Length: 279
Image (cartoon, rainbow, N blue to C red; front, top):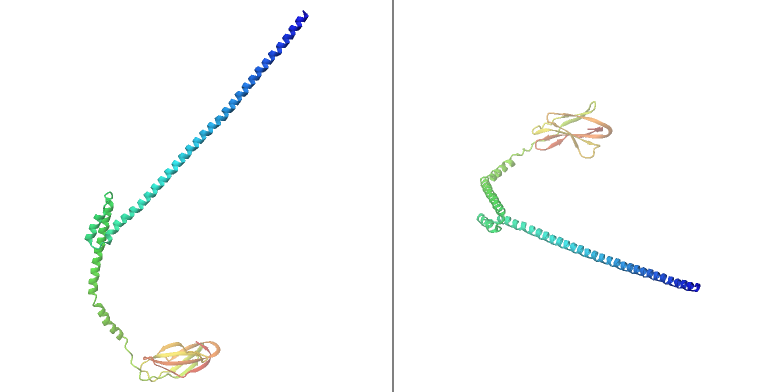
């Protein structure tokens, strides 16, 4: 019996490891499944970023397309603005041509006809009205200029005799300065002397006997007997003296008195010199 029990225990012991191996196998299979699941999850995780990158690329392409559309729109608006500016620049040129056309016309009738022909744009009646106003203003200026010119021509015709009057007046003006007759006799003053005074000298002389045409006397001095004579006084014919003051004791001074006549002639008296400077 003991032997049977031993064999049974051995069998049980042999069966127990078999169960353990089954458990180990189950654990290994579960581990493998978990590993497989992890790998699948990793693959899914790897695929998810790819999808995200596709979405990002799509967004970037859409943004680029919108930017391109905006740039195209800006360019088109810029081109339209440039075209509008060109049209606006050309339009004033046409208007100025229409306005300047009436001024160049010389005949009034032709001027009236030209604005009507040039006013083709019906949509701008104001321009035609302004052209007419300009024409009327120009016509008024021309008429005023013609009136002024006619008046000036009549005035010039009326005033034509005036040059003859001025010409006739010129000889009278030239004849007014009558020439004075020459003086027959010219004579110098006599007894020309110098008398000492408190501040200098008193020059005295005697009138000449030839008094016809005598206008006065010139009193002159010259320093140290050299250089030009300096007139210190011009006195009338009835004055026969002249006071001079002494300014310095250095050097000496010459004195001269001359009779002056109406025809410009003069006759000097005898010259003398005195020590010192006088004025």
